[in-house]
Length: 256
Image 1 (cartoon, one colour):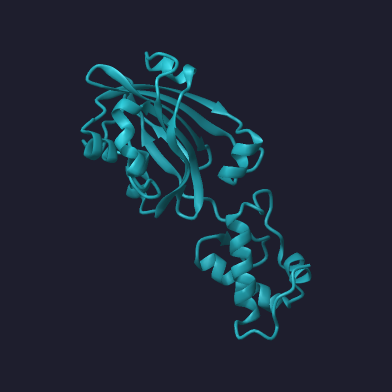
Image 2: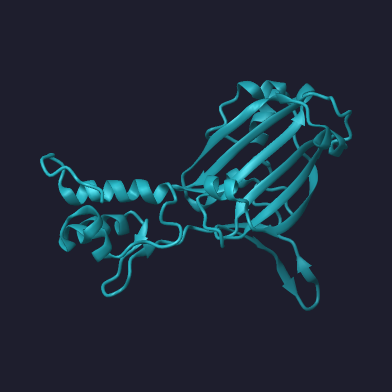
């Protein structure tokens, strides 16, 4: 049982709403959101207090709480990405109108023989490495890991990647722009540690995207992005005459 402060100036329903919001954002209710009766018993408050808190969570778009139905977590906004374009996850999220930020987990220079080989480099070559959890709105969207030759990307070590585009920083600080690339996309079930970072349930699938990006005819980026499958979709047009027609990027400047 979680006790609320009955002597505080903050109303009980507001305390309850704040605590539920924190638990929602931590992914505690990924499997199932408790009903009004269960919430009342857990917090020791009346059903009226629970309903007031749920009303605010519903207004904030965090839960769906309809009369006569079990409260449930509101589905997250889905990011749609046209296939066949050098795209920007940063730009795609911005285009949806969702606020975004990143939790930077690693920003350093290291050696990785496997990645170096994929970039056509010697195994001991120093590599710039960036790992971040990328959020769209209040919920995690993707776990993003990037490697580049440190000889090119070392100026990025001073960048603030909590809310910025990697490609924009690469162009501004290092004078390098990606021209083209290739990707392999697989459907996967994220590992337990990845599910924790992305706040998703064991049954939520993801897109595992491996990208190699080129500039000046040489590979300069190796990236692995794990995107929540319930928040991301790939799109393409097709017709009986022309088959699939991949949509062009909406902006000419790539920024991811």
